Length: 72
Image 1 (cartoon, helix red, strand yellow):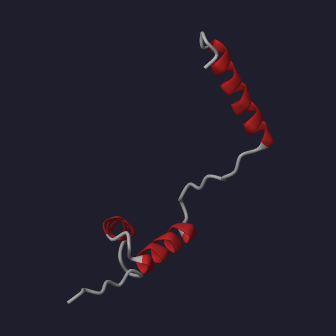
Image 2: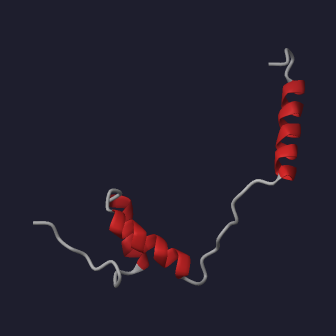
């Protein structure tokens, strides 16, 4: 017999633990992600890489290549 949980009323910390231990439960994950999206006080980072970021990365890679003795 499987136990049904009420994810809507479950505290966020408990829901997180449940989601981590039941990674195949898509309903629990969906509710957890919705709750994170709508909860205040959660720090969100904007994704994406700008062309300036790519230029900096390219320069770092070139510098790294140039610093190796045989260029490899």
